[in-house]
Length: 396
Image (cartoon, rainbow, N blue to C red; front, side, top):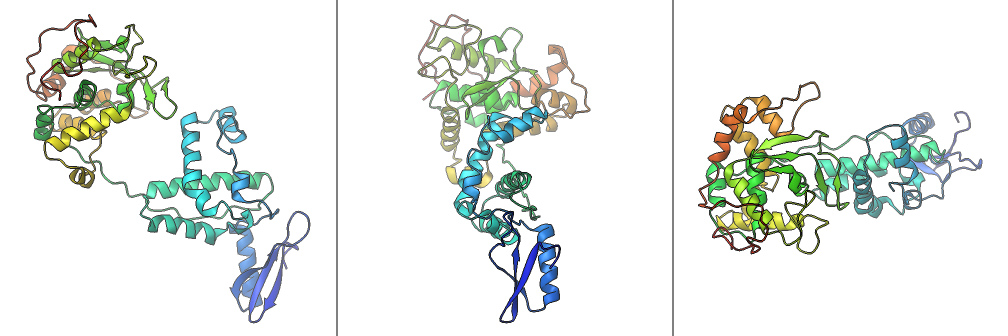
């Protein structure tokens, strides 16, 4: 026995260990798997050091984790008080992982049972279900956060160390230049999906950034959009900044200016500077649903022979537009700093450069070559000109 923290009992040839709890009773016996008392004692000492020893046995993981990741809860509040980076969206994502992956497997277990072997089995089971390394590691992080809180409350003596899964990220597929050009010659289900893909392919904007654009962010005469916020579909609200926290001006080709003007003219709601460029059908308070943009993109790909099976095998998503532009500009020998100023991929120690229109002529040449001529007449901001989503030959 070591400091009266555990006791050993022999059953047959195998030694079992019981650990002391806060009420001075002992936990249920756990097999050490050892036939030697010396090795059994070493097992118990190592388990105390690396394992998850409960001081109060009757608490289940499900009971302890109720509301753990609530935005107004203790865990998130403590993060904000300490000035650590945390968002309500992140809390919701952690709660989703907890309820989708962790609790179904471990929720009914008493915390006393969630030791190194239980967590390893949980990790390996997710792997066998073909979850990605990222999902597995997020689930392990959720368990660790909860156990850290349990340790602070003296419910456990320690947190088991667990090796994380290999995080092999599947490379994002991209369309070829020929495929992009063909994509915008077929019929699309609606103007918003068509315009969003044109904008993404020529600017590298993320979908959330596109949905966050309002009328005052669009500068047609100067041919650029001001990206300063991002729409959060989970919370159904505008984030105050972009993903990187940096605003940026992004020049766009004339074809994209034209289609955005058509989009504005088809907006069914009264317009002001805060009107979403990619408007919803039933309310001016929100942008259009992301699935309208995404499904339109997938339908157009199907029309040029990129079926769902091919798309999945190549791992092409709406975000692939961003990778496409990045690769296109690199291959066109555009300076990397210009590319980073467009995509927002600036490192912390890199100075932000603000480019004027004449500075971006090389970028604009690449952008202008992306899309076929649409033969559109000039369009102004008079929203009464057209409201028909199917008013041009480019839309089905």
